[in-house]
Image (cartoon, rainbow, N blue to C red; front, side, top):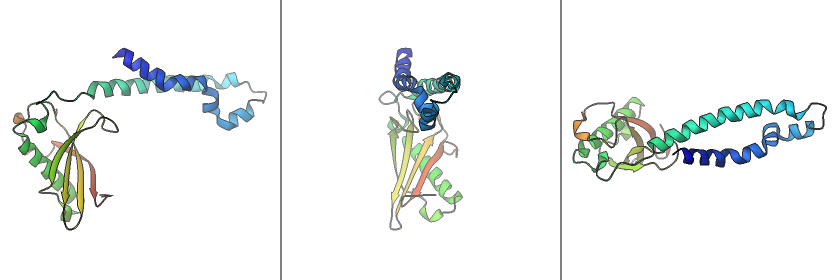
Length: 177
């Protein structure tokens, strides 16, 4: 894992260190490069910023690699017998969300529920539950993030709990609400 992190850091920062003054100072820096002020005096701040940035990127890569594993076959919540109760909870959470946000006419009470594993993007390494309903008024699309271990046994979950999911995207006919 450490070798993977170092490779990613080299990939990200390798080119940045080669052209640090141009990237940091831009065209103003090149025009000012001929002035009596030494460019060496500018090099300390970008280097400190790059080191701090490196630490942040390393932390993000480590957390992404730690959480980027899919459940073993048969262990994901949607592959278990009691998933139907958790899927109903996802629909209820979606319903509560639309009512709380003032658009109860689009409540997806009977919407289709599906699960996706995010291989990239904002929710990389996480399972997301999609609730989608198509009706005469339009299409309701909602994405919910589970607040429980998606690889654990779901039979022990209380499917009446309102905090099993967090709505992260809610759209009606492509417009957020």
